[in-house]
Structure formats: structure tokens, C-alpha cells
Length: 228
Image (tube, rainbow, N blue to C red; front, side):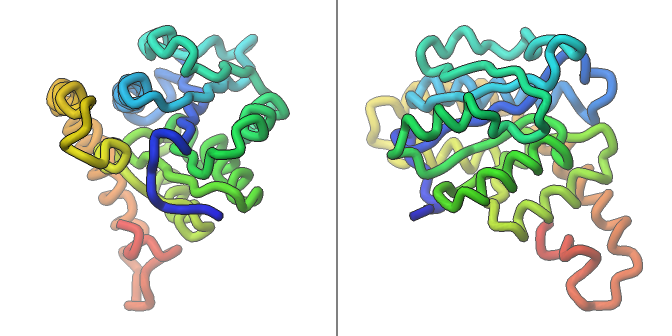
């Protein structure tokens, strides 16, 4: 049974294909790296497992070294190369099968309309997991693709969230022994979070509004009004 509640003990983070070779092509790539690093720090603090993939690393290189995967230690459950667009290659499926208590996946990375979308659809098809997509942690080469992909994922059953929303859901209780460290992390990331939101999410609203210019009151092109 899936749930929209986030619990560090029943969740995995999926980091999708944030590779340096994409840096010049992806819209606001640096903001995706910043949000990815924030999520990695959060995973380390709260003890959440992380699964990472690269897309054809032989041609496109490794995960961006600015993302500190080494800090995770044993929480890094694998860094798998793939040619499949979906992250659900056999090795990742084995990680999930070995952890039957996992009921939620939080995903961030690139590209929103290709590997992220196909991963989300693949996970949802298993019918065992709630999928949370970090909206300030995904992007594509073309900015117009992003709100359309997010809307598609939402319509298919994914939960569209933000890094801050997911972080506070996972923290859950200001009385927790880890709250002071959590609060410090949130403060340290405040400006980067604000910048990612302004450069990614607000830009997406503008793109989506352009798509809606011809709307006649029926909910908007592809339902984007309801998604923004």
C-alpha cells in the first residue's frame, strides 16, 4: 500500500543522471546540482538510502563531482550506469526488492521529460511505491519541456513537491534529536534554495503561462493551470 507520508525509514532517494557533460545543455543545470547536494546532505543527516544512476557514462562521463556522494558512506546503495532511460535497471530493481519496507521514492535529476519521467512511470507501474518528484531539482535542455513533464507525472499519480517540503516532511518533529542539525542545514541552504526556486520554478510558471495563452476556461492546456 502506497502512502504520501514521508518517513526516513521507508524511503529511498533516486538521483538521476546529473552528469557534467550535460552542464552546458541543461536549463539552469547549476540549480539542479545545488538541489541535488541539498538532498544528499539531507539523506546523510536523516539516514535515507540513495540510489544513483548515470546515462551511458562511457560517453557522457560520471556524476558531477560537485555532488558529494562519498559523504553518504553506506547510505549510497549503488551508482549504476545504464543505457535504459528509466532508472529501473535490474540492479536498481534488486535494491528495491531487497528492501520490502520501502514505500516511497523521492526523485531528482535530469532530464525531466526523458529519464526522470520514464523512471517515475516505471516505479508507478509497480504499484508498490508513492513517488515524490522534487520540482526544484529537475530540469531539461528545453525549459518548455519541464512543466509539461511535471504535469504528466502528476496526472499519472506522482506527487510534485519541493526540496523544502520534502525535507520538513521527513524531519517531522522539532523535538527530534536531529532537529538542530536539520535547522542548521536548512539555514545553510536557504539562499541556494531560494535561487533554485526563482530560476527554475518561477521560470516554469512563465513557460506554462505561455502555453496557456489560448486557454478558453476548460482547465488549460494539458491541465497546466491546475499544476502551477
